[in-house]
Image (cartoon, rainbow, N blue to C red):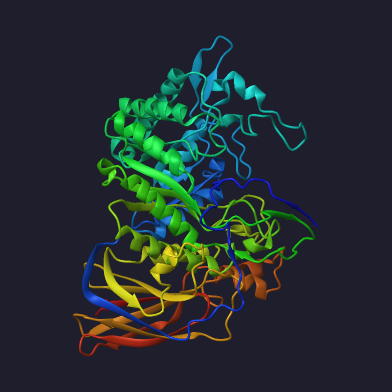
Amino acid sequence: MSTSTAHNPGLSSDTNHFPRSAPSDPTAPHVEAATVVVDATSDRGPLTRIWESIGYDEINWTYTPTGRKLLKTFGEFSPRPFLIRPHYVFCSGTGFGIPHWGNGNVYHEDADGNVSYDFTIVDQTYDAIVEAGHHVLVEIAFTPRDLLPPEADELEVVSSPTVYSNYEAGAWAYPPKDYEKWRGLVAAHARHCLERYGADEVREWLWELWNEPDIFYWKGTPEQFCRLYTVTAEAVRSVLPDAKVGGPAVTGGGVEFMRTFLTHTSTNDVPLDFVSFHTKGSAFTPWRVYGPTGGEAPEKQNPSAHKMLFEIRRMLGVVGEFPQYHSLPAIVDECDAGVPAHYSVYDNANFQFQNTEYYPVFQVKLFKKILDLNETGPVQVEQATSWSFYFEGERFFEGTRAFLTAGGIEKPLLNAYRMMARLGGRRLTATSDAMSPAEDLDAGDGRSMREEVDVLASTDAAGRVTVLVWRHTDDQYRTDDGPVPVDLRIEGLAGTSYALSHHRIDAAHSNAHTAWTELGSPQNPSDEQITAIKDRQGLEEFEPVRDVTVDGGTFSTVVDLPLPSVSMFVLEPR
């Protein structure tokens, strides 16, 4: 068996605080029991819906039949539009998408340097997003081939049938050779979007320069990036005076780059309406294993929620150094348990978590912890984007970071978003005596988040109370012989008669992957097998809806939680 330790895209080189992934520990203690209490009278303020955003590299799959259907699926279960952030809109190409690559093919020059624009692919992309009821997060990137500087020729690649040219290999990351032509491109793009979709629609969009310029996605200097941001912001605002512009979309380790960028915008009065950065929970080592098909991982590794929370908190602290930016929303527009998105269980078996119930429970836990972080400082996260969509040409349950697998089958991950969509608009105080202690994040030893039972609760104008309670640990290989009993109490209820619904994500519920494995993991499933798998892909009831009578304003129940799992309880007044 041979391995690859090539640099992992999307991951900073900063490893001073946390390891690249969380180790597996078969001796770690389990939670034995838990008590969860929700106070239905305590209004903690608006529940920031940080999960309403997705993004992906393969822009050209946005408008395929599968891409359009997936976007509409989000629109059908979400009460609000999602922000959709595709890569590569300004890259040159044929419109043919492959994993981790795509192109909008907008900018063109003739032999005399005369400029023209082609929005054919842009129109298909943004039409699909808007028609599904969503808004665009316009990632203004990368450099078109006709705007490459002379030094881009220095990027050498070994010619082979699997390589197009040095452009696809990374020449697109060089700064444009002509900033004024770039200005014209950005303005033309904004103007075209305004004319096609109207002011009311594009007013909801975000306009962000580049992606992760603190690593190899930017082959210029920080100073060149700051200059390009100024030109870009001016160009967008010249067409859309009230447009929301921002950046710099650095990795979780891009502290100094972020500080340089904010110093530039603040001292030069450059428009800035949001601050963006990324975080990744793991980068498995090696990230690709060249061995037998379906082989085990060389070392059992896992995503680390603590690594992600540490990077988010640290970056919020950098923004906090600039008092004038305390009110700006922070957009974590790549917020993912692992990288890269297009690697699968066939690259490294540790990516199996992206198929299973482990991942949706991880996401619910992560979103709650980010909401907790929002209550500790002046700068708050407004969006935490999952860099996930789907991949063409996959095998069934390939294990990539995606919402769908082959055959358009929904993976368990999508059900986490269905649960979050049902939360009300106001957050309630809720406590668990078995939650992972906050001081673990401050321990300084990079430890992974231990096993916990925790809770997130909400209410709405109709008096509906929604409670998510979960059991999870940052170890996809950790198992338990049985469930943990959780005493759930919802106090301060105003009514006496409610309808109680209970939905669950675990190995046996809301889990098309389990249904597939129970059928023998077929890679050529019959129509009957496809139907059986799809019957299990949505959010499933754990028990039928029942009427409950509340005595003294308190509803109590005991729920048994396997590892990992998340239950959603909804109390709806009769």
